[in-house]
Length: 56
Image 1: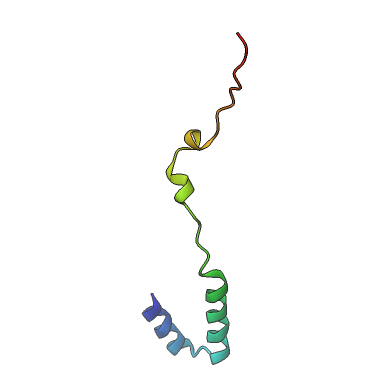
Image 2: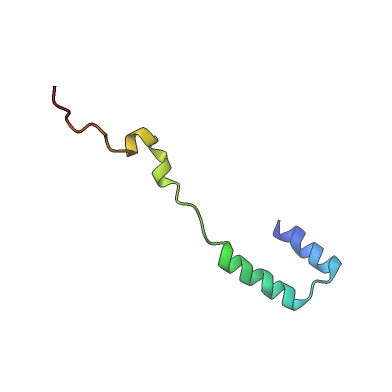
C-alpha cells in the first residue's frame, strides 16, 4: 500500500507540506487501537448476577 501511495505522490507531485500533514495525521490517529480483550468473554459472563437472594 505504501508503494502505491509513493507512486501516486510521484505522479501527482504531492508537495512536502502535504506529506508532513499526512505524517502528523498518521501519528495522531493511526496509533489508537480498540482493546478487544474484554470482548473475548461473552457479555453474560462479564455481567454480575442480579439476584440478591430473594426470600422464599
